[in-house]
Figure 1 (cartoon, helix red, strand yellow):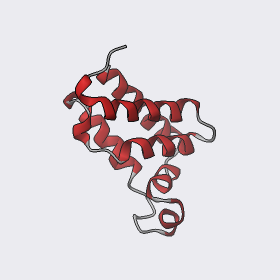
Figure 2 (cartoon, one colour):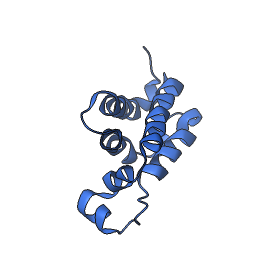
Figure 3 (tube, one colour):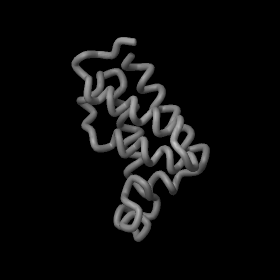
Length: 107
């Protein structure tokens, strides 16, 4: 499988995120949280233009806790973990599917 040479680091992090969400232990929210940790530290420009809007949706969803950015849960768990924990099973599964759609768009 060949992925874009100009986006190597972003692609490596995307593969790590896919692994975390697909094979990691725990509830979907916990696995998504680990996957989001891999992706959300990155800038959209590390990915090809055709997947940046998907990246933006993942980033915004996984960094915005429903309890508020400075809520107690966010302070204790970390912003990404708290935001992912706030998601329903269906919402977290949708975010996981978006990670795989990103991969489809860059390979």
